[in-house]
Image 1 (cartoon, one colour):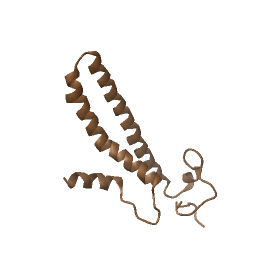
Image 2 (tube, rainbow, N blue to C red):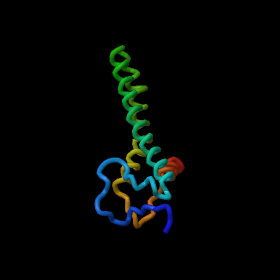
Image 3 (cartoon, one colour):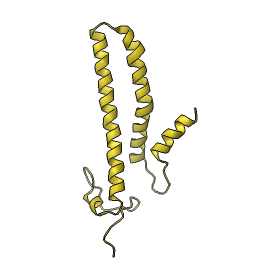
Image 4 (cartoon, rainbow, N blue to C red):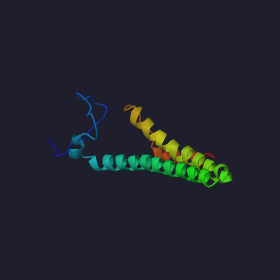
Length: 120
């Protein structure tokens, strides 16, 4: 008998925890790794939402001040770049959360993003 429990998602438990993080993670041996990974992914998701909101506010400012050239030369390229890079990373986060196949070793999101830039 050990003091710690390592939780393995491939085993089916009675029911998933309805909302939030299952309290069993507190006593798990890999709790720190899991929680840090979860918090980092949530930070990226919330950061994308905040940056997208800020860019939309800048577009409203451009329209209000009549700077229509800045919409096409600043706002649209920034939005395309943000959504293509960080939006793709958020898509990968959700893909990994919802489409995880426990039997396979899923590639890390960091490695996927680095490989994407190195393949250019």
